[in-house]
Structure formats: C-alpha cells, structure tokens
Image 1 (cartoon, rainbow, N blue to C red):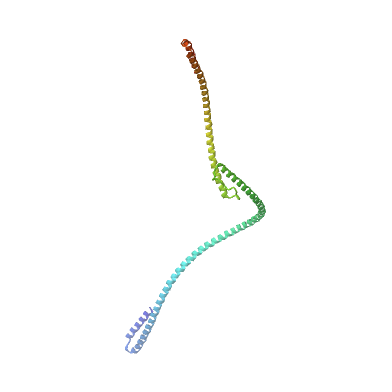
Image 2 (cartoon, rainbow, N blue to C red; image 1 turned 90 degrees about the vertical axis):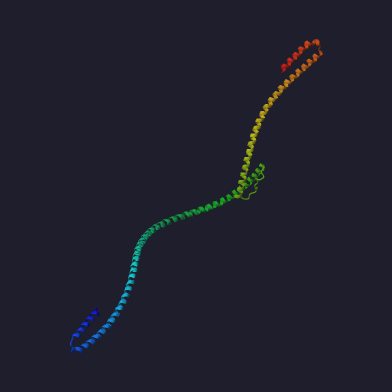
Amino acid sequence: MAEESDVSEDNRSISVCVLTPEEHKPKYEEEIRKLYKQLDDKDDEINLQCQLVEKLKEQMLDQEELLASSRGDCERVQCELTRLQAESESAKAEVKEVLQALEELALSYDMKSQENQDTSAQNRRLTEELSHKTSDLVCLEAEFSRLQEVNAQHRKRITEVMNTLMKDLNDFSFILGDCDLRLPCDVSCVLEEEYAVVRVFVSKVKSELKSVVKRCRNLENLQSDCHRKMEETERELCSCQLLISQVRTHTHTHTGADLTIRQSQAVLKKQDAGGKQSGFSKIAEGNKLFCDAR
C-alpha cells in the first residue's frame, strides 16, 4: 500500500510538470531528475521491501512450521497433561489405598502387638510346661530303657517259644507223614520272613488237619456203617443158628424115624408071610411117627 501511494504521487508530479510553461523547464528537468532519482530510490526501496517481504514470507513459513510443531508439541503436551492428570488421579487413588493400607497396618500392628504380648505370656507358660515335660521325659527315658531291657527278655523268651513251637510243628508234620512241611528248629531272632514261613507252615498244617479230620469223619461214618452191618449180620446169624438148630432137631427126628423104619423092615424081613398083618401095623405106626416128626 505504501508503494502504490508513492507511485500515484509521482504521476501527479509528472502531470504537473507537463502542464507548466517553457520557462520553468530547467526547473522541471531538475525536478524530473529528482523524481527519477526518487524513482530509483523507490525501486531500491521496493527491492528492499520485496526482499524483506520474501524474508518475511520465509519467516512466516518458518513461523508456520514452528507453529505446526508447536501445535504438535501442544497436543503432545496436552496428551501428556491428560496422562499426567489420569496418573495423578490414579496416584491419588493409590495414595488413598496406601493410607487405608497404612491404617489397616496400624490396626494390624496393634493387634499383632497384643498377640505378641499374649504369645509372650503363652511362651512363658510353655517354657514352664517344657521344663515339666523335660523332667517327665527324663523319667520316660529311664522307663524306656527299663522297657527295652524287658523287651529284650521278652524277645528272648519269644525266640525260645518259637524254637519250641517249630520243633513241635516239625514233629507234628512228621506224625502227619508230610516231609515237605519242615522248618528250621533253631531261630536266633524273630524276623518277619520267619513269621511268614511259620504262617505258611501253619496254613499247610491246617489244610492237612482238615483233610485228616475229613478222613476221620469218613472213617467214623464207615465204622458206624460197619457196626450197623455187623448188627444186621449178627441178627441174620442168630436167625440162621436158630434155623440150623431146628434143622438139626428135624434131622435127628428123621434119623430116629429112619432107624425105626429100618428096624421095622428088618423085622418084616424076618417074619414070614404068616406075620404080615402085624408087620403092616408096625409099618403104619412108623409112618405115623415120621409124619409127626415132620
């Protein structure tokens, strides 16, 4: 705008010079030179102003870039501020939580202090009890040593009883006639393996005893059957003996009748025809005796 006002003033001055008369020509020429000089100066000033404008444009571009970067920085700062505000809020919440936790810790500390006092009293009481328990433990150790001695004696007796039991079991297996059921007769110490062997042996002996008892029951049943059969046989024998005696009696009677008949026949042979009547009567008597005997 300043350059346009200067140009309009120069034009008006030139028009004024044209309208002046001839006598004022040198003066006008001087004025024209001055005006040209002013124009040159104005050109130089315009150039300077253009250069200044260019510099200002560059500065404006730089300022715009700086403004853009400032805006970006402002946005980043705004985001960071927002984040910091959020962190501040969360920090406030955390501070509240920490304060609440501190209050709880204070309460817990008071409770722990009270519990510590109670624990201290309990520890003193337990210390006293421990002293009593220690004295009792000494007594128990003495009793335990005595029980160990008694246990050793009992183990010795048990070993002797086991040896005796194994000998008896071996004798029993020998009586049963089972040569597989044999155990060592000498046991120096009672062990689980030996107990297992004894249990197996006892189970075998039990099975053998069961079989023996079963055989004995079978033999008892057989004996009862034999006694029953013998009684039946004795009854049959008695009946047979009675029948034999009856048969013997009948045989004896038949033998007497035969002798009588033979005698009668002999008598009849001796007698003659004259004595036939008497002979027939005797024969009839003999036959009657024979029939009575039957």
